[in-house]
Length: 99
Image (cartoon, rainbow, N blue to C red; front, side, top):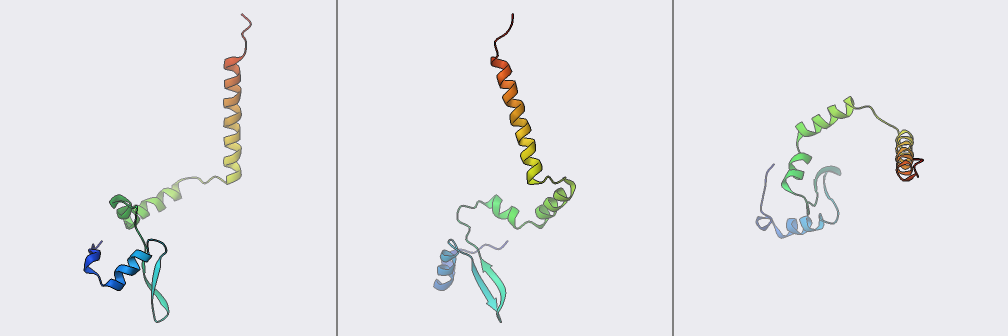
C-alpha cells in the first residue's frame, strides 16, 4: 500500500479526503466508477492491512466454506434451550434440600 502525506496533496484533494471521513467520495471516468476515497479515521494499521490483504480474505473465504451455516431460527432455538437449561440449573442450586 502506498502512503502519502496529506500536506503534499493539492488543496482540493485534501478537502475531498476530509469529506471522505463523513461519506465515500467516488471518482468516475467516462461515467463509470474508477476510484474511491474512503475515510479511515479511527482505523489502525492492523485494520488497514487486513482490509486490503488478499491472503486474509482468501483465508476468510476458505473458512466460510468449511463451516456449517446455521439459520437464524436454528440459532434462536439453540439459545433458548441453553437459557432454559441455565435457568433450571440455577433453580436447582437454590431449591431447599430434603436432608
